[in-house]
Length: 333
Ligand code: ADP
Ligand code: MG
Image (tube, rainbow, N blue to C red; front, side, top):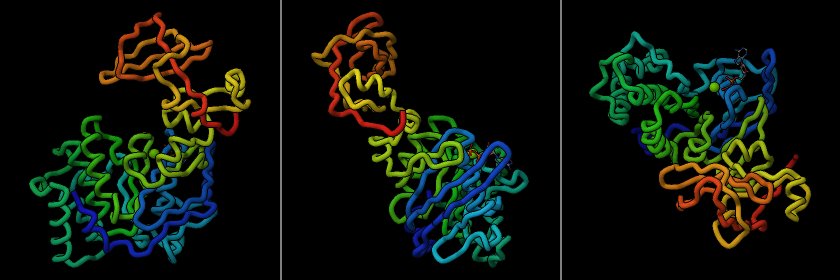
């Protein structure tokens, strides 16, 4: 895998800033402002169709915005054609050239940019080595495994030493086991001292593992931006909370019934425990391996709790303790 050291020269003092960026398609409109400090990774996290790829395509210059600005430091990217933006992009389906071998896929952008032959040879050689692709250099993409294809796409995106790396679902086309292995490699690459990067994903865990900042997108807008921990512990509203995987959300009426202020609340998992509390009837028991999940009926509320203790069966009563002091108030209903 390519090391952070290798990348450090590529991005000096550059900050990405999207200002009031707008793009409208029939039935869809995007409007957002975002900024990203140099060397940081931003994840665009949102459901399918929320506009994540569109943001990348606008930054890369594959689409033109209706209005707004995109700047990298002092440079106005919208005034530049895609090839002059110094942006490297890894596409959702990797989009490798099927008729070119691994070496030529990685070299492609360098040839286009007019790099001298010897510089191309050295650069591609280094990237092949660092992505463990040297033995595959002369294979065409159809002979590669999914993980190898992903590495080729990554090496190709990074080849010209772009100021900004755009990764669209970089692990999306891979099976789960492979994702788990590759995500840690990608994390190491993007971590401290690595390139400035925007990673698109619909997977919360991927966003949390890769990014310094996560921007949650919903229908072309930013629902919330923050560090993974801030987002998870303080989601702005019920939609974001649910999207991030929280299951215990209270409506204002339910909150009031429990003695909380009459607004929506999140009960984080730390607010629930097995203890001396009132009994909660097990509606559904989900054996997950390490842990067991329980859907519970507690005083007419449907709550979810996960614990390593799998002793309770459906219909039985689990002693649930609830710490309402940990409830997180949310915006909206
Ligand atoms: P995501 O990457 O979050 O899944 P996209 O950015 O690909 O979402 O798409 C957002 C919306 O914009 C979708 O409704 C999609 O159909 C629409 N869209 C994207 N590109 C185009 C296009 N070139 N022409 C028309 N509609 C488009
Ligand atoms: Mg997409």
